[in-house]
Amino acid sequence: MGLTQDLTATALGNQLFVGLSMAMILFIVTSGLSFILGVLRVPNIAHGSLYMIGAFSAFSISRLLGGSPIGFWLALLLAPLVVALVSFIAERALFCHLYEREHLMLLLFTFSLMLVLGDLVKMCWGADYRSISAPAMLRGSVNLFGSPFPRYNLFLLLVGPVVAVGLWLFSSKTKIGKIARAAAVDREMVGAIGINVSWVFAFAFVFGCFLAGLGGALVAPTISITLGMDHDIIMEAFLIVTIGGLGNMWGALAGSLIFGLTQSFGILFLPQFAIVFPYAAVVIVLIWRPKGLLKSVW
Amino acid sequence: MTTGISGSKSIGFSAACLAVLLVLPLIVPPFYTYTLTLIFVISLLAMSLNMLVGHGGLYQFHHGVFYGVGAYTFALFVTKTSLPAWVGFLAAPLMAATAGLLIGWFCVRLTKLYFAMLQISLGSLIWAIVFRWYSLTGGDDGISGIPVPSFLASMTGAYYFILILLVLCLIAMYFILYSPFGVTFRAIRDNPERCEALGINVRHHQLIAIMIATFFAGIAGALYVVLERSVFPDLLFWYLSLEIFVMCLLGGWFTFAGPILGAAITESLKIYVGTYTEYWTMVLGIILILLIFFLPEGIVGYFLEKLKPRDSIRVPEA
Image (cartoon, rainbow over all chains, first blue to last red):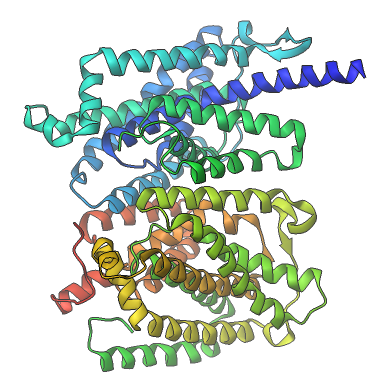
């Protein structure tokens, strides 16, 4: 009896940490999506593709540097910048001409962008499975609740809150962050006081995509990097943003925690149907509060 | 069948198309017959979606679920019960419409993106269950080798069966969409507040329209099984739903027959560009981007606009 209780407590604790570290990745990706939704009011379906490009870029950069410990850290730094560059080109060349158009057309554009970027990834990296390893200091595991827990997941648990605080400081303390928030609430007014709204949009789009790239680079050592990553994450990301409240950064955090934790605890109780739990949680939240848990900026 | 051109012309055009389609399997190689049949199935699905998107202004973002429910219902009836196949064929659309009622009941209380997201979440829940319920649905492997009645076993048999059902469904859709109910439904799209004020029960109409459209999606699902004799969870994945949504926009969502053209273009691209290059999705993406920039009304919409500038169906969005 005592033994089973110990086991259960260990397993619960372990799944709690696994769920939390999954939630951190989801949070970083969805906060970017939420940021774009808040400022541009566009559901960016290409977000998953940019996340995938982030992961593949991290792979290439760390391999170029010969797998040295510095390689991983440089990949973490540069891969999101590659993604930011790709999104900047797409935004300035194409997307910025469409802002006056109907909402569905913007959605269709981001869908087309997803199709193009998905095949670009296939061209550049092929359809093989790729993987990168974390630097030595983040490999292996530590004992938590008497069971081994991967160090890298602990690292993710540190990065998530750092990004959250960074985002909060950015949007509430810096000028550009304040302008972006203002544009989310009333874009005409922002334009009227002489700010170039088009460039605010460009900035918001690129910044959101940067976060997608960061999420992709961070997730890279924990999964096999492959085509189809984009499809797997994008709908989850949309649902998370919706249950949190469109455009609300803390909502993205709450949604990610709900999604990550229900999935990891689901594995414990009903492994076969583990992926059903987060969707069920989303359905319950949306039926209860269709506009999300926290205040939406819409 | 397209509205906007005078009635007799479009009936003549449709009849000519039908005549060509009726003789085509006699002269073209079987592979083309297969491609055409697949296009028929997807066309029916896209048409059923456009009943809600184009005519109702509903953000029906997870229509593929009802297609999948229809396909799985038929497949399960045929493989798990000893009932005759036609029972399964009747059950498929009824089951899809029931799913439409259940999901729609929650969704019609919301509008636009919130409608879409609630539907995606409910649809994804069904997808996740089908994806994992190995003992019933075969999980991610799906079900293959589904037996069909002998007259459908040959490619030509399936071709004519599916073509006839498609035509019957299109005629039914036409009458529904241009009945008083259809007119009311479009009025709700254009001005829900005014309709509400006129005493029209907006949600009630939308829910009925969702059930009708999902019923047709269920037929499309069963027809898919007749053609492919297999089902797999991707039928219910959000990607297919977005793909058919795009077909409606591509062909022209304010027209009656636009989605058929959209479906034909997308499926042909998939099959023919797919034989030349593995990058067909990029080709589709580029075509879509060009279309967004140059033909925002969709292809049929564009030509209708050229033929008849004051089209009664086209409604400028606010």
